[in-house]
Image (cartoon, rainbow, N blue to C red):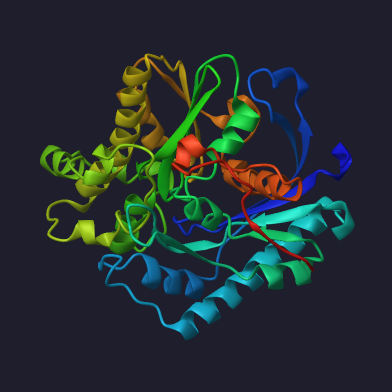
Length: 385
């Protein structure tokens, strides 16, 4: 397949529920970096598009994913699952059609669309049986766009004993791996790390990203998120509450590990008292501290120094959160992936474009050392228009 044909579209709507991000991009094998990473690529962004999910869809998804009940108690009716999948399928299709219009892309020019879907339940090992559920309607998306769609990325890895997540480290390696040590942190609803050094690639979810700080902002102020962290910046960190949060068992668990709203949801707000702004500052500090602790632990255990932490995802737009990361990682420069050539907002959507490309080329999209699967494998199911 020629480089010109390796145009793919990626669609991502994450656990933060802040909308749908889409990119159309062209991938080309990167011969210069193949000694560092055998499947290294370069990327050219052809078009980007971001749109909000309808408010009523967001509320229905929050009811399904952010309840105070734990994963064993939450229930979602079959009719609601079916309706949500159809609604999301139309949202994804509307957005993809608009992206293709902006990029002047005909269906025949696009090898595939990668669409992760909306995670409403993620029960990785050691849950028995391990399971995961992303709401999506890839057939509807394929028919409406006229482009093959790759979806259901997590199940193959779970079938091989893996966590099914995080899925982006393989893409980070293909795009960002270099002779120098690099740490990449994707801060969406959940924060995940990719650590690249000496042809080594590891990665794991390290704790909450925007999930808790967004939820608290919604509860207390009726706003979807804390713009630039400006509200958190007015508060004072509650040291006792922060210490309690940092004792969350997920943070101390060894990799491979992945998490979601099953671990970090509004249940953690029960019994909180005091200034709402102080709690927002503390929740933001919790996110920053969990990331910094994970980077430091890996540095110590692998005897490697990371000169820079490259941040992507919505958290990269939170100036206060970025400043707290800088303060906690004194010897590590904190910047965004824009310094590596890909703007922070589009990295995760680009990852699913790349995963769709991998699926059509029958190349692995996972890293066994990241997920704990018995082997790397091709990810995703293919839906034809």
